[in-house]
Image (tube, rainbow, N blue to C red; front, side, top):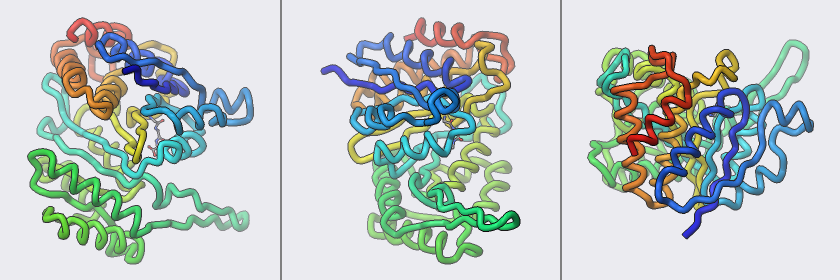
Length: 326
Ligand code: GGG
């Protein structure tokens, strides 16, 4: 069976790491057909539209989409693309790899981030020169959907339960609803929960990341705390993600377009290649996905490595090394 995969490289290093991940996918025996589509800052500049309708429609119809990165147009591209695939959770594993110089080499956790609301729902207003406002939306239904996914996620593997990171002591109505709903759903499913205020999480995860395994968070908290975890494992070049919807999904590295190094050919493709492995898992190709994970792990351990990991290799060198190990 041929799977159609929409590929949206986007801006900056998205133009380097996305083709690298496609090369790795092409080196597997999975029958994939790639359809490239445009989005991002450059398209906005050229056409006035950061996310062309054609790109949105392709993502809304494909089984899976592989996305790179965008810069200033993140809100106009990433949020609608997540909407196109009807995604309710952003799965962000953060783990340290042998051989990579990590602040906390014992880190191994996954963030299950609410993907549709919170402050990223976009209800922002500029009322006067002096005043701007933002309405934060949290619904019981979206919190429930995320919690149900979290319960299924922990049931499938060796997990003790979930940690809910929130700020319900201050945002009582919104994070209170989020926290109470996740606890209710977990109780109904026999899944243990513990809770931590998101600011305390930031401290505790730096001191001892082994306290955390599966972390369920509202949208903004999940975005920020997973980037923090990236700092513990060696940088954003290592964090993949999957935006899971009901019938389709979108895979992307956690990092952005990194304009400071874009065009130099030295961006770390690991996060996007691991995102591509998650795409294969999503399609049911567990063996091929596992082979990519192993090849990336071996490459991170033995090299070559890009400059963000202390090496001097190019994106292409790392990509070839992963493919050679497949
Ligand atoms: N890899 C996608 C990308 O460009 N991420 C940067 C970003 O701003 N992300 C915001 C988010 O994940 O909500």
